[in-house]
Amino acid sequence: MLWRWIGVFLLSGLTGVATAGPVQDCQPCVFKAAADAPDLSLSFQLRSDPGGGRVVEEIIVQRAGQEIQRLKAPGMEPVFPGETFLLDEQDLNFDGYTDLALATVRGVANTVALYWLFDPSSNRFTSLGSYPWLTADATRKRLTSYERGGDGGLIYTSTEYAFDNHSLTIMRRERQERRPQGGYRKVVEERRDGKLQIVQQQTVKPPR
Image (cartoon, rainbow, N blue to C red):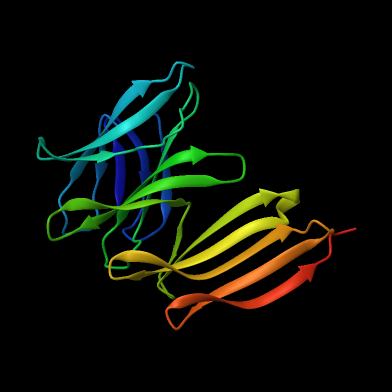
């Protein structure tokens, strides 16, 4: 997959290799999902935030100079001067074609992104939705996310997803939360017989 901001080289990578690209703007960026896929131009439609930031409202997708699609970006937090937008490319559904992500929330510990799957039959994108930052494991055909919740990383949620009929399904979730009486409670769930079931619970003592 190739990211290119016209006039400035930003990032290059092989298709299927997970890379992330910080960009000042896309006017346009060039997206290529695979060697046999057409070049698509992605342009940000921006609005100014009252606080001086910029927000992506839509990503305009063009092919050979013709607009073919608009990808809406609801819930995006402003990007302020000196900061960059973050695009990501991974083969999320393991079909051999790179998919698209735009980070909408970038905190100190956690990032949330909107995801779109590239459809090679139409050379268009379909919305996957908003998820914590996803990492693809091509060997296991799983996607993973990790959300930190505080206490120096002792509060967290780790989630594994797999595709089921073109939508993401949680296959395993491990979360650790603070107990009112002290310490932490860790709960592990796995999908069995079509539903998430608790397979492990334990109390975790706080570090000294």
